[in-house]
Length: 180
Image (cartoon, rainbow, N blue to C red; front, side, top):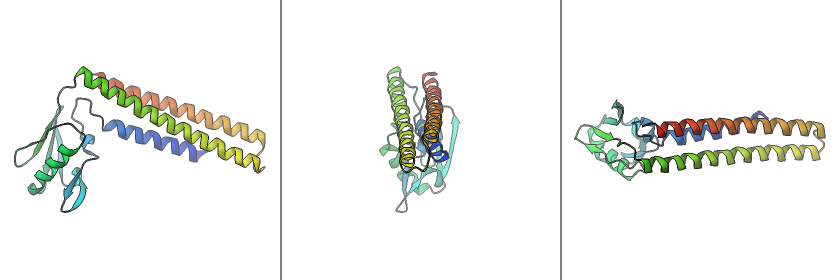
């Protein structure tokens, strides 16, 4: 039983990581997590080649330890799906996050709902996988029919709990997006 609950929890963890990459009009350094910079021939996370700070709520400042990597960082950010043009002043790269438009907020809300629904599907697939496993055990007479019914109810209860958790996480992200 714990195996399936753990798998469901991992699905929710992936969902929260996906949500952290959706920018809500505020500067959040986690939007840079998936961006890799060509650093001496190997793709390296930005966090490993410089200092990242947020001097105010709309700006991220990237200060590389080696200024020769500025162009590579700039190029990596431009080619990412971030949709922000980096400003390079020769020492640091500045990312300024514009105020979200109503249209963009609605697009991001759709994305949040899609990610949440994908996560729910994953959780339901894990439930089905568990129930199938219990059916096999029952057919092999490893567990009784009563045990099967108990296990089926337990996995359904866990699934319901995880679906509520997904809804809660999605609701929080939606609130964050709608806050101006």
